[in-house]
Length: 279
Image 1 (cartoon, rainbow, N blue to C red):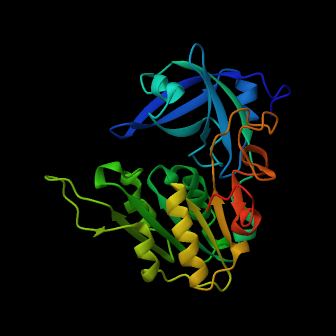
Image 2: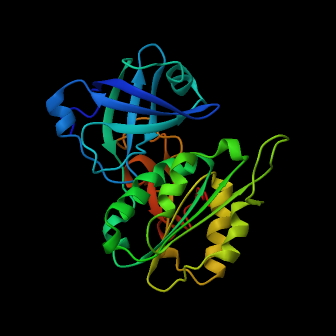
Image 3: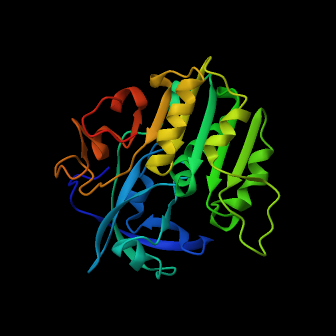
């Protein structure tokens, strides 16, 4: 979309929706109506958001790709840019570059079972793919989601879980590490990898999408391979150390790959064996 990949476009924050104590979903709209009209993305891609005086950082788009009037980014307060953004309210302005990156396998997943395994904030980059499957339900087979968070209060998009459950051929399993005193939780307790024992999806005609802490993905991949899934049908979103977004600065280089340009979505076959091994 952008002619100059280093020049951000002005965007206005039109809504801020709290997800957890330190995480919000920001709805953004490019100030130029024509450029917003031409803004399109695929599930799994990201944008670079800049704030004057604080810098620039990469954030995944967390909204449906079929919504063209605006887009969402779900952001946790963990750094200078996100820490500054957490204080923004409606009508605040930021700079936006993108979208960038390799998306989730939208086309490859058609006609197959889709198994999604997310941990914590890792559900945000996968949410557009969930919405893509649900909005085009006849093009995909079973949709199964495993989601883990530290506590029930750290779960994202909790108000959408019931709506997701209304779709056909669907299974949702959730777990938390701990349940704080005074917090109601009737679900499972433990690591998300323990849910692999309950999955209905098999390696036959399926794809797996996973995103979360790298240590989580390491054990998720090990569990999937032990159950017969192939390395080339497991897709991971890495999203680490991205700085320029266009593969020029080398900040996010992993072995011979650049996370921002060659990813952030990779198959496990893509990254298995790289010198700078991640998972």
